[in-house]
Length: 419
Ligand SMILES: *Cc1c(COP(=O)(O)O)cnc(C)c1O
Image (cartoon, rainbow, N blue to C red):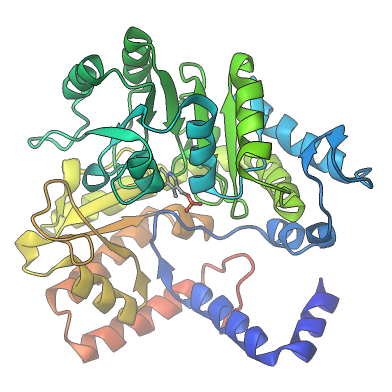
C-alpha cells in the first residue's frame, strides 16, 4: 500500500494533502455522527485495491465478461459470509449503496403507482421509504406512519390501521433517527395480514444485529437491506438479504434491473468487514456501542438534556434542544468548532424546518471503535453541556477543543494520522 501512497503524493499533492488533513481531523476530533465509523486498515486496503479495474456484470459463474477467475471467489466469499453472519437464506452484495439497494427492492416487487408504507422522515424514517422528495415518494403512492407524541415510540396500532386501510404492497421498518429497538415481529404480522412484502432496513443497526446487541429481523422479514459502512464498519456499500423464494426477483432487480457492473474492490472490502464482524471481539464491540450510548444518554439526562423517547436502546441519541434555548444547527456548528462532530436533525413533531431544526443526532459507533468506554462518555456529555450552554464563547471552545485532542491521543483510531 505504501507504494500507492507515494504514487499519489507524486502525481497529486493537492488531493494527498486533503486526505492527510482529513486523516488528522478524524484522529483529533470526537466523531459522534451515528452513521459513521472508522474502518480497519484491512478494509481500507481492500477498498483501495486494483479490483477496481475489473468489470464483472452478472453473478458468480454467469458473467458477461471474461477473466473472472478471482472475482467470482471474492464475491462468493462475501455472499457466504453475509449469509453466515446474519443467518440469511440469500444475500446479494452488489448494491452500490443503501439508497440504490432500497430502490432494487421496489423494482423487485412493485410497479410505479403501487402503494408503499414506511416511517415518515420527521419521525426517524429514511428518504427512500417513500418520503415525498425521494423518487420512492414520487413514483409510488406512499403512506407514512410515525411515532406517538407521548413517548416517541413507533405507534404500532396506527401503523396496523394504516396498513389495513391502504393495503400497501411493501412495508418498510427501520430508519435513520430511531433511538429505540424496533419490534420486527409486529411488522411481519401486519404485512402478512395485508399481503404485503415486509422489508426491514437495518442500515444503521446492522453491526448491532451482527454482534447480538439488537434483535435480528432476518427470521421474520421477507427482505432485509443494509448499508455496510455504518455500525457494520465496512466500506461504503450495501447488501440485500432475503428468503430463497425472493432470491431471483432481488438478483434480477439489482442487475440488470438497476445497476451495471458491481464494484469489486468494495465487494472484497465487504468480505473483509464481514469476516471481522464474525469474530468474538466484534460482539464485544457491538455491546459496548450500546453500553456507551446508554452511559452518554444518562450523563446528558443528568445535565437536563431532553432526549427523544427519554433515552436509547441502541447506538443513537436524538436530543430536542428547545429547553436549552438553542436550535440544532448553531449547536452542531459550535460543537464542531470545539472538536465534537454530530449533525443537526429534526425531532418528532418538530415545528421547525429540516434545514434548521430543533434537534441534534449523535451516536457511539466511532468513539467505541477507538476503545472509549463509559468514563469517556461522561466527559463527552460534560463538554457538550459546556459548549451548548455557551455556543458563542470562543475561550470555552478553545479550552474544550484542547482537552478533546488530548483525550483523542490516548485512543488512536485505525487508518488515521495522529497530529
Ligand atoms: C443510511 C441509510 C440509507 C442509505 O444509505 P446510503 O448509502 O447513504 O445511500 C438507507 N436506509 C437507512 C435506514 C439509512 O440509515
